[in-house]
Image (cartoon, rainbow, N blue to C red; front, side):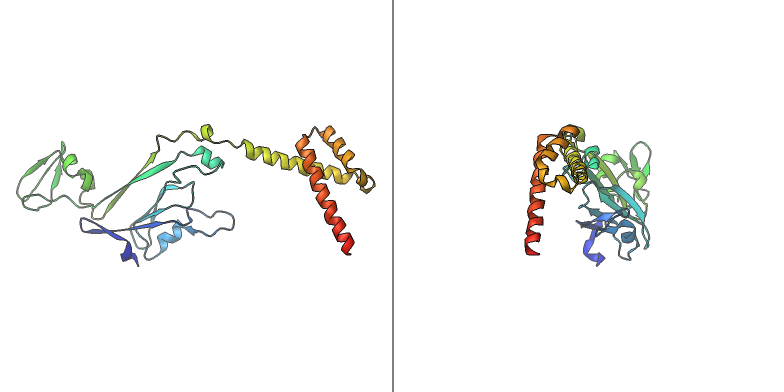
Length: 246
C-alpha cells in the first residue's frame, strides 16, 4: 500500500515511489508494455513523487493533478549515459534532477517553540516571545526552504534539472554514419535484386556476368557485388533442394 512509501518531513508525510518501468507521458504509437502518467495520477493511491527510469530519453519533470487531490510530481531526467546514436540521444545532454522537499510549515522558535513569522531582510521573529532571528536563509533554508514556502499547509516539492558539465554535445561523441551507410547499402541491394529479376529466366545461368554488368552500370561497389552473388548462390541452393525433394 501507499504507507510503504511514506517519508516524513517535519511530521508531514510525503510518499515517494522509485520505479524502473516504462512510464510515459503519451502513447508510444506502437505495441509496447507501458503505463501512462495520467493513469498513475488517477490511481486512488497515487504518491506525491514518482522517480522512474527505463525510458532512456526521459521526460524531465512533469506535474499532474491527482484524482485524490494535490499533484503528482513525476521525474525521469533520462539515462546518465547515451546508449545509442538515436537522433534523440544525440540532441539531449545527460542530466540529473535535484529533488528538494520542504514541510510547508514555519520553523519553530528555539526558545518557546512558537511558529516564526518571516520579516524583510532575511529575518524572522517569534510573535510568542519576541525573539528575532537573523540570516534566516542560512539557519533554516536547507530544511524549510525560503520564507515564502513557510505555512503553505502541505509539503512543497521543488525540482531542478542539472545538465552534466562533463557531457559533451552529442554530435561530438556520436555518429550515425555507420547506420546511414548500412541503410544505403541495403537499399542499393534491394534495387539491385529488383534489376536482376527483370533480366528474365533466359539469362539465369549467366548470373555472374549479369551481376557484373549491373554493378558497372549502377556504379556499385565490389562489396555489394560479392554480397549479391552470395545471396544468389544461397537462393539457388535452396531452390535446388526443394526441386530434389519434390
